[in-house]
Amino acid sequence: MWPRTLYGRLVIILVSGMLAAQLLTSSIWYDLRHTQVLEIPTRVLASRLADLLTLARQSPSQIDTVIQALDSPDFHLTFNPADRPNSGDDKLRTAAQALMNQVIVERTGAPAEFELQSLELLDEQGREATLATLLGTSTAGGRFWIVLTLPDGRALHVRARERQGWTAMTASEVLLDIFWRVYLLRILAVVVLVLVSVRLVIRPLRQLSAAAEALGSDINRPPLALGGPLEVDRAAQAFNVMQRKLMSHISDRTRFLASVSHDLRTPITRMRLRSEMLQDDTSRERFRSDLEQMEAMVSATLDYVRSGETSETREQMDINTMLDALQADFQDQGDLVEIKGKALSPLLGYPQSLRRCLQNLLDNAIRYGGSAEVLVDDNDTHLRITIMDNGPGISEKDYDSVMQPFSRLDDSRNSATGGYGLGLSIAQGIIVAHGGTLELGRSPSGGLKVTVTLKRA
Image 1 (cartoon, one colour):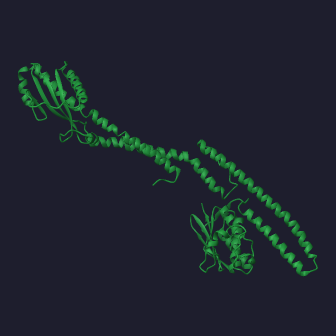
Image 2 (image 1 turned 90 degrees about the vertical axis):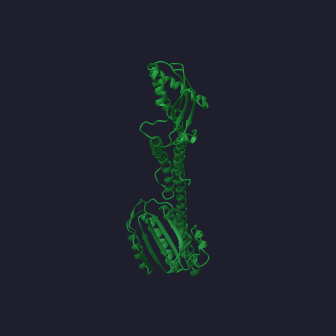
Image 3 (image 1 turned 30 degrees about the vertical axis):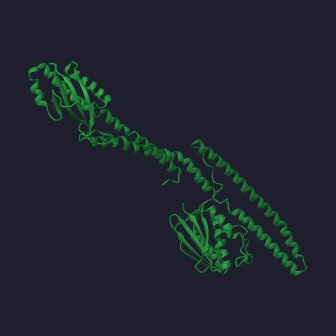
C-alpha cells in the first residue's frame, strides 16, 4: 500500500497529516454541543419564569390559578416539593443561573430572587447524557430544579425539562452540513492543492531521472536545465558535471584507440609488403594470414569502441526498406534471408548504426546457421525484430557471457568459423544507444534467436 514514488509518498504524508488535523478538530462539534446544548433551554425557561413573575406582580390574586394551569410534567410547579434534587455540575449550574438572571432582568426590568438548585444534562430518553450523546446527533436537553421566591414571599419550586433547540434544522442536518462544509470541501481543496504543489516540486526531480535514463542512450544529449529546489538544483549540477566527464572520457578513449588502430595499420601494411617478397610460398601465406587476422581484429575492436556512441543525427528510419536492402545484399552473395511481417511506420533512430547492427546479426545467423529468418512485430509502443537461424544455438547458461566483448564459445560457435567475440557486443551497444534491448533465446529449430526491441516513444 506504500507507494514507491516520491510523489505518491509526499501526497500520502501531506493528506494524512491534514486528515489527522481535521479529525482532531472534530472536538469543535463536542465543544459546540457541550457549551451551547443548555443555552437555549435555559433562555426558554428563564423567559417563562420572567412571564410568571410579571403576572405575579401585576395580578397577585390570579397567580395560584395560573400556576395550576401551567403545571405539566415538563414544567412542574409546586409549593411543597416531595424530594430534593441532586445539585449536578456546579460550574454548569452557576453559568446557567447567571444566564437565567440576565434574561429575567432583560424581560422584567428587575432581578429575581431565585436559586438554581440542580441542573442535569439529559439525552432523548431522559437519562444522564454521556460523551456519546454530545458527539452524536440525538437531541439533548436539561432538567432544572429552581426555587423561585414570588412577590408575596412564597417559595415556588419549579422542576422543568427543556430540550435543545436548532433553528429549522435537526441535529443530523447540522452535523451533515458541518461535514460537507468544514470537512469534505476543505479536504478536497487541500488534496487538489497537495497534488498540484507536490507535482511542481517533484518536476525537477523527474527531469533529473529522465535525463539519467536518456544518458545511457545518448551521451551527447544537452545538459540538464538548472532550477527547482536547492537540493535538486545541486543534483542537476552534479549530473551535468558527471555527463561532461563521461563525454570527455569516452572521447579520449575513442581517440586513443583510433590512433592506435591507425598506427598499427601502418606497420601491418609494411609487413604485408615485405611478406610478398618472401621466396617461400608457405611462409608468405602464413604471414599474409596472420596480418589479415591482425588487421581484422584491430577493425573489430575499433567498431566495438564506437558502437556505444554515434555522431549521427536522429531521423525517421524506414525499417521495411532497410530490411529489404539487407535481404537483397545477402541474396546477391547467395545467402537466404526470409522476412516476415512489416513495420507499421518509420522509427526514430540512427540509420547507419542500426543497419550495421542488423547486418551484424544477419551475418552471425548465416555464418552459423546457413540462413536467417527475420520476424517483424510492430505496435504503437514497440518495434520488435527477431532474427533466427538453424545453427547449433547457444546454451542458455552462456547467454550472459556471450554478450561480453571478446567472449567466444569453445564449441561450435567459435573463432574457427570467424569473428573475435565482438559481434553481439557491438550489436548490443548500438541497440542500447537507441534505448532498446537485445535478448537471446532458442529458435524453434534449436538455433539462436536474437530479439531486438526498440521503443517508439
